[in-house]
Amino acid sequence: MAEPFYRANVLVCGGTGCTRSESLEVMAGMTKEIARRGLTNEVRIVQTGCRGFWRDGTGYDDLPGGTFYCQVQPEMSRQSSKRHWSRGESSGA
Ligand code: FES
Image (cartoon, rainbow, N blue to C red):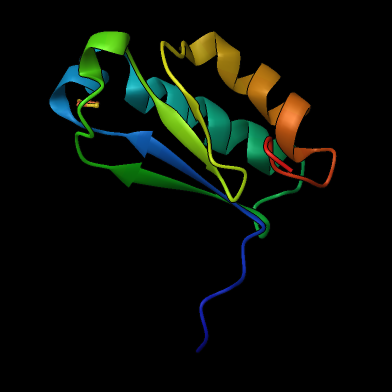
């Protein structure tokens, strides 16, 4: 079976430094908000390893736009979902 096509892939760091900065809570919040908006088949959350930005807090990329965010807090998950993915485009489009 072919992999579904996601119009946005959100890469969230799951490395040790970022999990200390609540990256798992950020991912959970984004996943919940994406589901609430009915975007589960369009937007995918991908947990990555350390990407070298741990001093800046939890970071994530929104692809294909390519925008990188850092110092993301769990309470920002809903705001990000509303701003970027519910308009039918990723943040950089
Ligand atoms: S632990 Fe997240 S960038 Fe390194």
